[in-house]
Image (cartoon, rainbow, N blue to C red; front, side, top):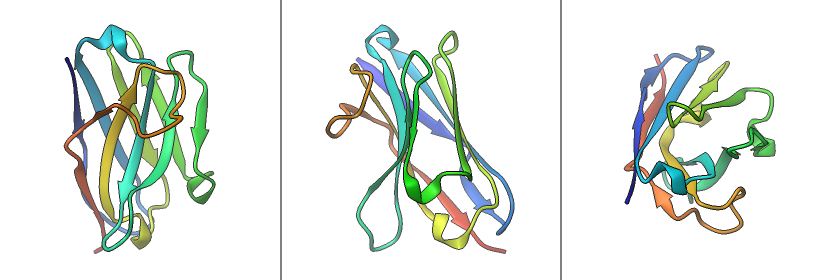
Amino acid sequence: QVRLTESGGGLVQPGGTLRLSCEVSGAVFMIDAMGWYRQAPAKPREFVARISHNGEIRTADSVKGRFHLSRDNAESTMELQVNRVKPEDTGIYYCAADSSAVFTADPHYWGQGIQVTVGS
């Protein structure tokens, strides 16, 4: 069994920096790709970024340049850093993982989601 646990959400001021973390526990050997999705209010869930076990990164065009993804395979953790946060970054952020190196479809494993609110 694989469990994903997100941390780091909350209220962030516009223009600030947001850091989200995700930790994999359980059968971590099953995991290759890890990544993030988000769902803004009244909008469908969207892909944000993913990183494979070998470090290959894919980022959605809409967030390139501000969203940066890193991973510590030894600790089974992943971090998303968002620079110059905008109000439209508000939403629920979901950690996701899969046994494949890429997300060809919806990832198999999901975290509970963590709320991020951009405001003052």
